[in-house]
Image (cartoon, rainbow, N blue to C red; front, top):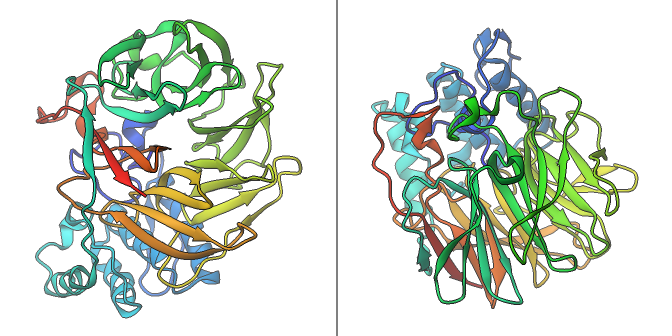
Length: 430
């Protein structure tokens, strides 16, 4: 799930790295707080608290990596989001100077649409961007208002599972494309379904559950705790229910499952990583609060450590000690803005939707698995990808939610009566 905007009324069009969180997390803007000065440009004196926190995190990372294009992009978009679009121009100019080749999203920079300098830079970046269109539609789901976010596959049966944010359910799509209800709406206390993962060792489907603004029913789950639920693959019946019980704000986003059945969970709101032991229904903290900046996609390393995608890039986390370090990378291989993350064949496969026009990428790793050595674009056709979210791998390809439409709803009513499409699952060969 992409980091999103924290205003009380989200815009229909996505706008910057903080564009969808209001829809998914149900948060409100709250009191403003000072934002730090930065170079070049300066954030406005008072901005939304979430924006200010993200600015602080991005600025801290920029001090260490001043030419990181992903960070520059996020800083520019955050500045627009904070209400000072002209101050975003120096960051965009720096992007162009380093040869950035991920096209700017016009909806993220709408206040600058008529600014001559912005238009010049946007055209320059777009001109150098690779054009990659190699995917096909694997299947569609005839339910336009599903609003899917998580996808998983059982490699034994080639059954795909698709979670719904809006309808609080999980669908199953068999190898022949037949769609059926696997988890009916609200079963077992399911709220909005975010990341989902298949545990073949224990025949379970794990689903991250959280009350979002766009979900139907239950007064948005205002009194319902977020957590992670497990359902039997045989019949979709509830098997485990692990909730955050401390009364604090949590947003379980994505998961990785170890061979022993331990489940690792990213909590985007708390900025930390949790573990569910195989034999106890508790969420044990691994990292300190705020150690990660909006952690999202997660993948297990062969040695038991974890790749965790967060706003500045990819962190490598030791689940035993909680120690973490940033994955090193090379110019031209930005690691920020990643949503779904999969380790397959020695490479990280990712949905990169937070640093410009969305794209599917493959990240090559060195022998240690601790350094990115190259990034190749697998798909970036804007006609194919409308806010893709997560992905899974099987049979030499990745299967991704191509048009999540996360920004389509606000609360119980359609925001401006959006024109919805049937969800598409894209197949991209590796």
